[in-house]
Length: 343
Image 1 (cartoon, one colour):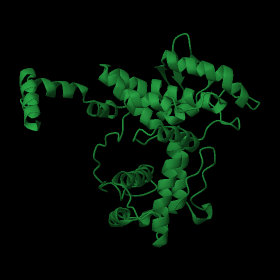
Image 2: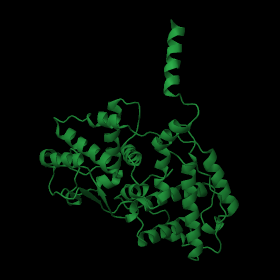
Image 3: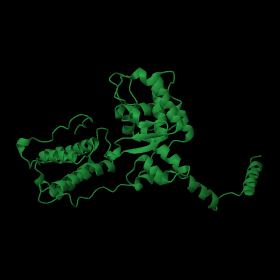
Image 4: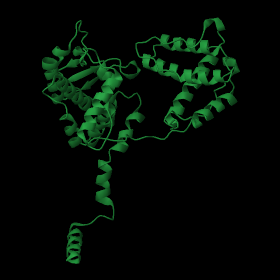
């Protein structure tokens, strides 16, 4: 299977120009270059490169190297292959993973047809797996959040930094990469805002940040960050012990370790605080449109998933109107009856 290139690493070429422009690998290189010209994000292009590499490996193993050799039945065979494929741990690919791999293959052939590299699109009628709507597996309660926030050792430089990181995640709900890319000048203490530059989809947005999180950022910037800086200082807010910015995997592991140490019976990492922040705002009565702005969702449908996670209002309605509820006097009688029975 293809290796996922690192973010700052140039994409390896899929094909060899000597094999001609109709070679499928070369055509995939042209497609990825076209996405770069159209200002697609590096992360998006890397993801498409990896998924196209999966399909290219599968097709090459079956002696299919030219794009015009691919037909609808062949793509159906690839879809069946993904369904029966087993990873190294013996587990199948999730339907979401299958969906992602097929979607990118379909987008590639659609582009090849539109740009006249192919006479027809073999993927035009390719059926994708049906996806269910997934709810967040866990959402933290306020007490659980406080337990996690108390885990970092505040007597250490790393502990102050980690507490500030957790506070920012909880207060703003920003994504992992958005925190990694945060610069000092993106934080406006006077206005109580944080500027997310080039978030998902190259979209900038301004989000509010709470006073407590700002206090911890200030403590980190004054007491901890100067001990982590390695010149030249490029202004990245959160630094590792080596003076570098965090990688996504390193930040994920840091947050996960603190959650595990809190021993709350729930697992997760950076995104767990994003779910928690959104659900907390919704349960407090915040309009879902404002939550959409904070989270940076392009579509309202993405944000509305939290209306299913937050059941406070539904619970109130259930308690108020369900006929199975106990009235106060009936509850007292039921308790007295239980006491007399047990005596």
